[in-house]
Image (cartoon, rainbow, N blue to C red):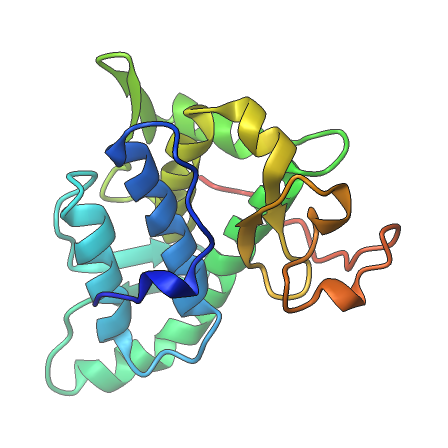
Length: 207
């Protein structure tokens, strides 16, 4: 599954290829889960392309998101319909947790608990003076995605503190140094007053 690069914001130029690849993995996840998934194969392709191929985790047969449950990535026969039926609830919860965690980072005061949790759990770790993502096979899907974002953010925390934008309306991630854009995106900029933002539930649990 290769998604056209033009659909994404310009990635920061600092850091190595690994950090930028982790950032693209997280942004791609938010993009594909913002639309109606045709079937579970889209999620499986995302995982293989952005997590397995990057050397972050082995190829898994099942992804978890407690308490929503689990979903088989490569079901066969009658299990395909069951996997597709379970997919919306699992992805909905995972996406909400990821977006809420990123929104917390740009709140005032900033809430970076998801990054500290990812480091504590070993999902994001230092190796040869750089950060890498190594989520365990039993990590929730949201924890896997957040470990990728953590790698990117830790590569230059000051830049993300200054320019990371997370849209309150759609959850899209972008970069802009303008304070009024921190909680919006170009498509929804007209909905932001600069004072009051949409307040989604803050379910930031990543374990």
